[in-house]
Length: 306
Image (cartoon, rainbow, N blue to C red; front, side, top):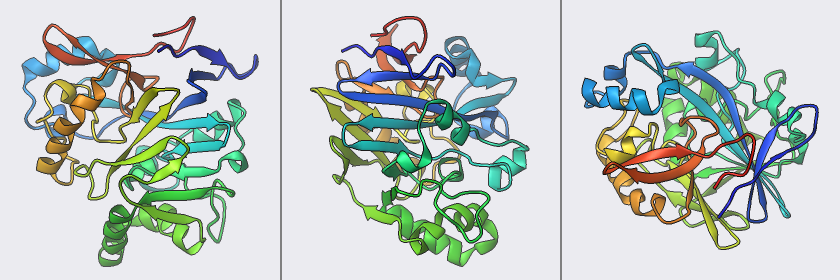
């Protein structure tokens, strides 16, 4: 299987790849250093292990902090356009405001020739704030969907958990109240469970642990397979050592079990894996090198990558 590099137009040079009869547009909403030290983010990882991964993925580190990409993915097929997750959002709410930064998803979609109204489906792998930031328009009062013709989908367990959390602890639920809960009142939300079909060839895979209803997506086209992880893995080191849970995992034991269960799928021949927090472009393959599993991103410039 080969993913070919193409361009949308000669002005913006927005990259996309072909995957069977689909077009994939990986979009980085923002890149930032996570607050806290590496040992705070991953308490069980030793300095020796970090040294190895600094060599493998130097762009993922800024001093003693994890430098992370906040990504999304557009999947364009004959039957419509699917956007998977919506990034951290504008600089007026949540983490984006805390960091004094704003995501760039709307501008990058425009550069790629993708109008908000052309997106048919928005799938939310989970409802953490760096995945839901552009659900609604930042300039609209009352709230209005950022993608006005789209159905927004997420797992019913995820919705139930965070809806209850927002009700019980409203002072800690600013982003939920601003960017997530309005979807129900706007009548654009559908709740799904594992095995549901999101779009032709796109199936929901339950990967609970990072959050109570966290899901990944499996995309099959032309006999080929692509897996969108969401946050089932947040750093490539977890491929070799799935027992290293991140401090942000809601249920570390369940998240670890999920990662171990996924490895056979991710290492299958010619499977392409999308890791939102992995190095750009976020699409790559899991391969064995020197007796350990590593992440090898696909190139997004110059020529075909395979």
